Image (cartoon, rainbow, N blue to C red; front, top):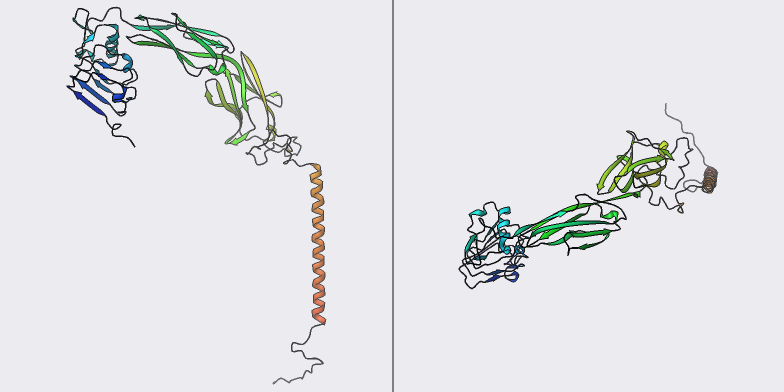
Amino acid sequence: KRSEREKVTDIYIANQRDLESINEIDVGLYTGLRNLTVVDSGLKFVSRQAFLKNINLQYINFSRNKLSSLSRKTFRHLNLTDLILDGNPFKCSCDIMWIKVFQEIKFPKAETQDFYCINDYNQRISLLEKPVPNCGMPSVKLNTQNLTVIEGKTITLYCEATGSPSPTIAWVFNNIVSKHESDTNKNPASFTIKNVSSSDSGIQIYCIAENTVGEDQASVDLTVFFAPNITYLEIPYSDHHWCIPFSVRGNPQPVLTWLHDGAKLNESEYIWTKIHVTNRTEYHGCLQLDNPTHVNNGNYTLVAQNQYGKDEANISAYFMEDPGGSSPFYDHPGYIEDYGTPTNDFEDTTNNSNQVTSTDVSNKDNEDSITVYVVVGIAALVCTGLVIMLIILKFGRHSKFGMKGSVLFHKIPLDE
């Protein structure tokens, strides 16, 4: 649950002569703050970390206070729509020139602000009309716009910076795997990558120069060339079309060709290579087959090649039994009888649970013969029992009322 301070979006302070500073402790808890106004007060200092937690700040008005300087770094992370600072006794120095540059770039209507500074002679100088001398924005230049290297080699990038005061230089990058080192104490600064890994291909490297007036940056993408590497090749599965899935890395993009049982496979409208996903220098796709038959059974070899080398990988594919029964793949443990579900242990050649051997066939025939003999014997026994029962019933039955001896039948004439 949000606290009451987190819900505050606007703070307005005026005519507070004892308010001389603002720091992170003062406003850090107001994380929902959007508009901050402190006017006609005694504000002299704003900490660089003052608004570190107030990322939602859009409007700041510090008009008519006692500010003589103000750091650019205080506001660099904010997406401000307004920054009003007129009526403050800023000292004319490079430390406040960023305000002029900042407002000219971000706020085209900044000229409406009454923005002045006080020089060493206690004179008010309009920063819009007469900038402070010897103050200039930094400017950076990289020695190349196309940083390319072959895997395993070493490469150095240089960055030259100008500006007044002299800017500091920093290199910024993310997740470089290769060993690297930088030297920013010289101008131009250098950044060296040793034994470059193919995993670093596509990474952006930034050179940032900064002084009190502002900052500038330039970037370049690192391109690493390397030989192909087939990282994945599996048995086919059925999904609309049959697919032999694969993944290949390489830069430049490798040329892919297929062999079927050692002979070059000519692709057509019924069998073709398709790349489904590309991720920098990695390509994921399928050799797609439309309604393959037993003719398509066999060993498939994927060959990936570019000017830096090549790689090969093999897989066995079984789509359908040979109608003539002569297919050498019918008894293979990887044979897919239901046309669509590859076996889980395709490469486990020690698992013969799915194979049918000649011994298994003989045992099965013997079992079937024994079963037939048993059934015939039981049927004969049942028939014999029925015959015996009929004989007993015919010759050995008694009178219904238990009477013994002969029975006299009297002929009774019928009325005519």
